[in-house]
Amino acid sequence: MGARGLAFRILRDCRGTAAIEFAVIAMPLFIMILGMIETGLLAFTSAVTEAATREAARQVRTGNVQNASDAFASFRAEFCKNLPASFACGTFYFDVRTFPEFANVSLPAVSLDANGVPQGLQFAPGGANAVVSVRVIHPYHFITPLIGHLMGGASSTVPLISTAVMRTEPFS
Image (tube, rainbow, N blue to C red; front, side, top):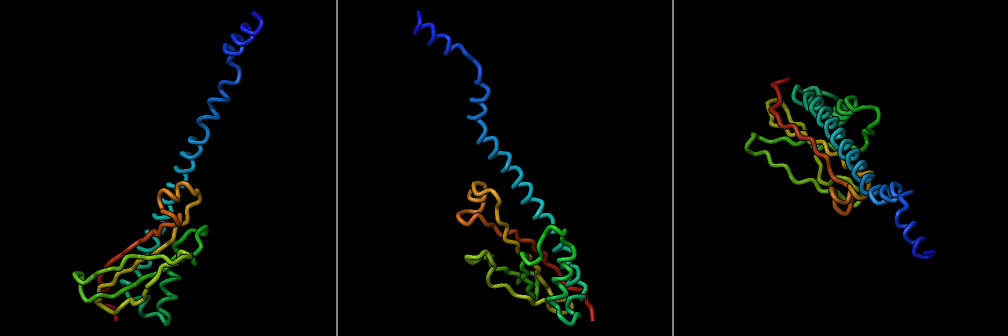
């Protein structure tokens, strides 16, 4: 009964089962929690970008940007003042284009270079009564590599794009 009894006692012993069960589910649990945090941060960054873009586009619509001595600097300053302090303004890129009519609005796809910088951007805010598109691009770099790989592909970076299209006012 010695060896058989010892084996039976070991099989009946339940001490440590909670630790073993937690070890089995810990990694998927932490990945899910990090994924939720990452997704929330992505949504927050997108909402902040949308709000700042809307306010900066309003300055284009009213002609304040076009009438400034340096239109790009004026637009950038207007955009950046609407960002929370935790966001670096240098990580946002601007693409402002003018079109003759709304039917002619055609925006090219955003492509990022190897460093995550958008390519082919313009800054042409137009004049009075012009149709203007304002796009702000923020290359979002994922914190968690697994979530970034699943959502952003091989680079773990996805461009967050905020767009506003409007006709400027008849300013002078």
